[in-house]
Image (cartoon, rainbow, N blue to C red; front, side, top):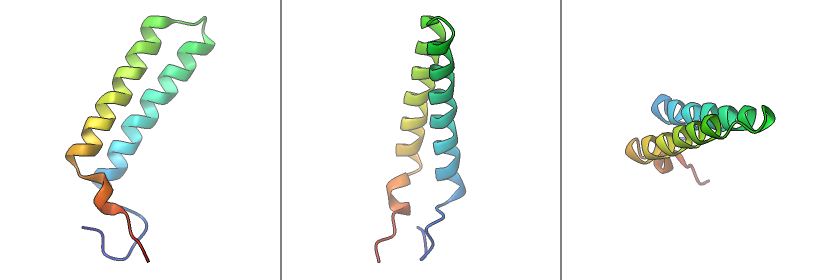
Length: 65
């Protein structure tokens, strides 16, 4: 559990990075045509990142003052 910091745990940041990579891949795919297979691959990575975020219990990093 987070102890008074708004930074979050490294596991949570890895989940956020995976979601960000998927979002970036999907965005680039839309600019390239659109390239639908690449877009859906990016969407799949976002879903994978969401599942990862649930597994590492990312919401426990929330600090309310």
